Image: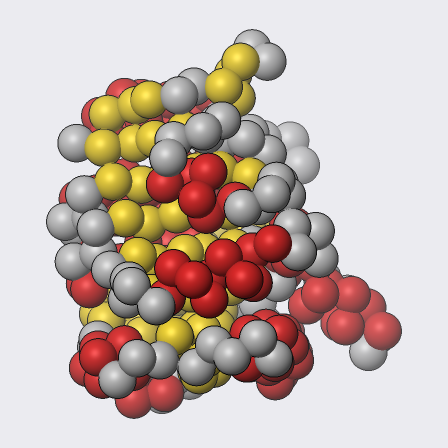
Length: 266
């Protein structure tokens, strides 16, 4: 089992070879795809006249502040637009792709954050209302297993349900990590717009889970979530996590062969 996450920053720049690559790999391996699309959410919200706000946690994690209206836009764009565009691209070449969200069959449950501690412009901590963001609390893999056992490739948009069945924005990288962990996947691959984790202009080729945790405070916005998600996936039982570029030819094969990427394992 392989779980592949491709983010919004690389969605429009994925190498054309990836579609046929997914086709070939899916003939022999069970596969689940998880997508992002935050840039498209921001673009649509702007067109609708809804200003988007981004916040930073004390640990340096940057995320979208999601009020109720933003949650509705997020759900519409992720599940209604991006998910179906990806599915269309896959079925066009004969892949038996099925688009779902974390809402379907209660696949992703999350605890709504009632309060958020953030850093203000002066770098001081402050507490604000939590909005409609959540931390994943459980994953029901039954639908995903039914689909993959039947030869289908699920394409998952990262939207979860709260305890009160509200739509919640959950981070796509961490959603992929929790899905991979609960599926007991052999590999989780995060395709991004760079060749893995880079520090001092050098790719860090191999890391243990503990080393990755130590690096977290030194990592900039964007990559820090992938490193955090990687550690979570490993702690949930995934054997290996790979962070690699989705912009190169045959990006999945390159990642699986550990070419120009960061490999994290226990």
